Image (cartoon, rainbow, N blue to C red):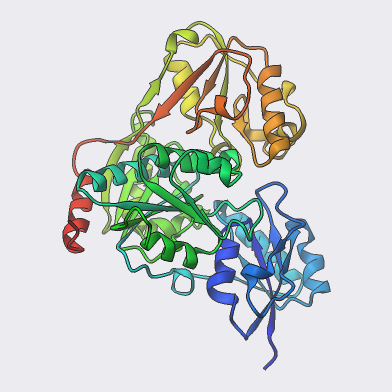
Length: 446
C-alpha cells in the first residue's frame, strides 16, 4: 500500500509534537512539509534530520502557510493535518475548505495518538484562550505542592524558534540559563517566573526525551507540572487536568480550537479575573462550564495586581507594554497593565502605533485590533531592537511594564518604568488546595 503524503499545518509547537509522536517512525505516511503561521520568521527553515528520524535523512522543509494550496499540488499531498492552537472555529473550517478545494483530506489528531505517559504523576494546566492566566495558576499549584514538601518539575509547551536541533531538550534552573539557550522574550516570560520561585522548568522540541530527563532531574522529581501554551490540550497524559477560563472573553470557551477540548478534559476549572470582570460575563462562563464540563470542580479566582511604584504614573501620560501573544492571537483588548494604569490614576494611555518601527509596525498591521497597547514582541534580535526603539520613540512620562519579566533587563528604556505583577488568588471555597490535597493522597506522595 502506497504511503500517504502529509502536510502538517502548524506554528512551531503542536505540529512538531504531532510529527514526533505519530508520524516520525510511521511507515504508512510520508510527511512532505510543515507550514508555519502565527509566529514570525519560522518558515524557510527545516525540521532537522537529527530530530526527524531515519525516514527523513534530509529533514523536512517548513513553508509559509500562504503557500498551502500550491504545496498540496506540487508535493502531491493526500492529507493535511491541522496542528496549531488558539484559533476560532471559523478559521479551522476555512482551512479545511482550502485543503479540500485543493484536493486533499483535512484532519485533526487527538490525545490518544499524541499524549505521552509519564512515570511520574502529572498535573496539567491549560486554558480556553491565550492570556487566561495559566502561568499564575501553574505557579499557585506549584506553591501548594512545594508546601507539601514535594519536588516539582515544570514542563512548558514548546516555543522553539531558534536552532531546533540544539533545542531538543532544554533545562532552565537559573536565570543564566535563559541567555545560555538564547531565549526570546516570549520564552523568558514563561520560564523566568518558575526559576525565580525555585523550581526547574524544561522545554524544547522532543517531548518524549524531555519528560524522561525531567523524571530523572538531578534536583529530584515527585510531580510533573505541564504548563500549557495557547489553549492547547496537554502533550502528556494528565492525572489531574486544570483548565483556566476568562470572563473578559465570555463565550470564547466554546468558540475556539482547541480551547473547548481543553475545557471538556478538565477535572478542575478556574474562573480567573473575577475581580475585574462583569457579573453577566462571569455567568456566561459558568453556563458554558455547566454545559460541557458538568463534573468539573469550579474554583473562583482573581488576579490581584501589584504596582511597584504607583506614584510614578499618577496623573501622567503612560505607555502600557503587555505580554505579546496575549494581545496578538490572544485578542485581549485589556490586560494587567491597562488595569494597573487606571487603578494608579494615570492621566492618559499614549497610543504607540504612530511611533512603532520595523517589526513592531508590522505587528500592528497584522493585528489591527491591539489598540493603544504595545505588545512585548521579541522573537529575535531585530524585533527586540524595534521594541526598544518603539518604546523610546513614544512620547510619554513613564512606561508601565505588565510582562512577567523585567523588560529593563532585555531592552534599554530611557524613561521611568513601573512593574506590574499578578498572581492567582482563589475566592472562597473550593480552592485549589482541595484537588491538590486529593491528588497527593491518591498518588501516595510525601
